Structure formats: structure tokens, C-alpha cells
Amino acid sequence: MRLSLPAVSAANVPVAQGPEINLESSVRISPVDLIKLGEVRTDAAGVADWYAQAGVSVPAGGLDLHLHSDQALENLAGNPSVTLTTTLTGAVSATSRATIVVPSWVPDQTKNWGQDESVDFTGVGSGNSLLLVTAIADLSASSNLPANAVFSVWGSPVAESFVFYGFKRSADGPAKTPKFVHIADKYDSAASVKKGRSGDAVLKLDMVHISDMSGISRYNGRKVAVMIDVKKNGVVQTGRLIYTGYGVSAGTPRGDGDGEVMDTSSGPFECLLSFTAP
Image (tube, rainbow, N blue to C red):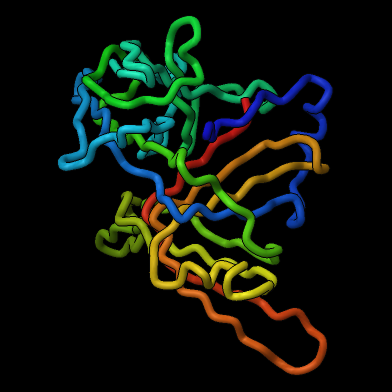
């Protein structure tokens, strides 16, 4: 499945620019997780190369590919773009390209993106845009990538879809971004601020319990992918978050009276892919 969202129409820009409320997000779960296939890394001169993930290959049926920025992207001259040499379904040889852009409906149009910004790869050429990738050969081209940067490439499941499980009450998961720490010097406890290690990456989900086979507890003890979609006013989808490698540890506390029975899960995740509608 494609994870990138359709563009926001001009008529819906005022809705997209409005605030988000809690009920505008929904949760779906895939028992088949995303696969990290490799990384595109740049050296100190900004020259990029492809590094395949050791021991990992694309399944025979193919995957949709997604580019993920492993760090914040600051004040770039243009939109960062990666093109891979790929084989598509039907043994079609073609390049697949992913370009990160600032959404047209966002007031700040500077070339700055936060960590975890993600976008689909699409096959280049007539009739190739919806084909799945069955193999990655190498990096074909890149542009506007910063020096000393890492972009990971992920494949999303196609045999299994993300399925709605329960009615969400809350979904709280921070981005796995580095913490900033103070470095003291003499009498100054905050002489410098330096980037440190990221904090715990934990996603918490509260969902109305339906049954053990119709709730998140069905996947207790295993890793899944979690999708959180944001649709404003029920008509304009502006964001999509994918939490990969989410370890499900759910319980179903039951109290007294006629209150809702909830499935509550709190577990670590491996990577957050953040897609924004262009």
C-alpha cells in the first residue's frame, strides 16, 4: 500500500491549516511489520552511496518503498531526492525516486524538515508509478542531500493491510529524537548545549475493548506496525504516522459500573515514519 497522502486541494487549505482535535485521529494495526532494507549515507562532501541491510531481501511479491530521514534537515538549497536502481513487478527494470517536499499548504516554505520525515518511492516511467519493487540494485542518483546524513529505506507490507482494531481514546508516542543536554563549565551549568542520545521510544495506546480477538491484545507478545491517521473535519487527511517494530503489551482492566472497558497497551517501537500531505 502507498503510505504517502494525496495533495491538499486549494479549497481545503483553510481546513488543513486549522488546529487538530483529538477525535480526528484513528489507529490501525498491521501484523506484518515494515522492513528496513538499507540506508543511503552521505560523506563529509555530501556524496551519497547505498548500503543494503545485511541478510535482508525484498520478498518475491515485492514491496512499496519509503524514504525516511534519520535526522533533521536544515536550510537546504532544494528538495532532498534519492533515486534507486530497482526491479519492479513483471521484471521491469526502472529507477524509483523519492523526493521530500515542503507541503504547499504550510505557511513556512523554507527548506527545513524535522527528523522522521518520510515519503514514498515511485517507479519512474510510464506505467511504473504503481508497481511494487522486487529488488534494489544500487543508488542511481541523489540531490540536495546534506553532508554526513543518513536516510533509511523501508518496505511496507502488501500481503497484509492495516486493519482497524477498536475505538481509540488516546495514542501517545514521542518521536525518537535525540535529547539535548547541558555541558557545564566552571560556574556555568549550561555553558553549552549538545545533542545526546534519544530517550525511550514508547507508544501508549488506549482503545475501547471489543473482544480479545478484536482488540490490540490479540497481538500480545509480538511486534506489529501501528498506523495513526489524522483527518481534519473528517474530509482532509493531513498526516500519517507509522510506528514500526511496536512491541504489544496490552491489558484489559475492568472496573465497576457502566464505564467503558479499555485495552491499554504501552510498548517500545523501533522507528517512526511521518508522512505529511503535500
